[in-house]
Image 1 (cartoon, rainbow, N blue to C red):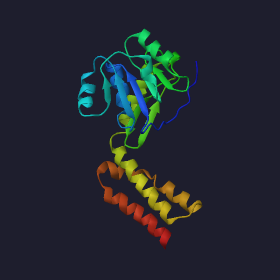
Image 2: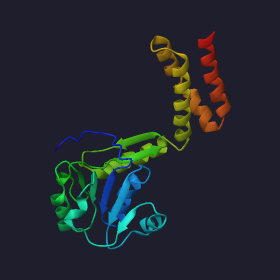
Image 3: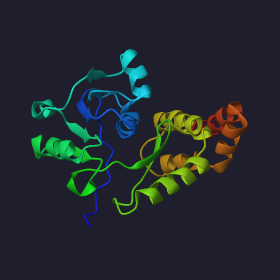
Image 4: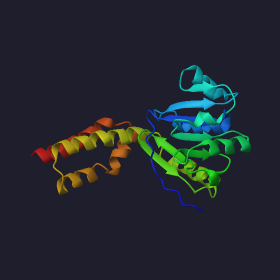
Length: 212
């Protein structure tokens, strides 16, 4: 079995194609909706959730069957129909340099999607290299519970605090020590308690120590 290379792909402003309009296509769209990609969906029908988003202008929809020229100019292509022959035709139409995911056959794809937990800027991806997607989903659920919604505010705060540290220190040992101190578990506890002032005071104290 091929071992895939884990990457985080920046598709902001890039052309992405989803062929299919059912539940699987919806799942693929759901992973893309905050990516900034220019998404085009080709399918005679749309999943109800996708229909609502299309009406809100979230993506373009070609209400028809796939044709080989549809792949032109697309960076990423999802072959997400329930017809293996159509998915194969999509794969064959694509250029080898295009990223193609066949949802019905990972072995024919040059990339696969991961099971992902996202809390703001925190993204945790899980993959079994296609060996058992069900296990990936199970682990995703465990991570979803472990890294709850408080992590979004936590990571946002850490990002801001890191910038403060970088602004008052030079590259070296002192900076590294302060950055490690920002990972004190107590900060997460305060965030979960909604006590953001305690977090701010903690960082202010660190910064004050540098200025003394």
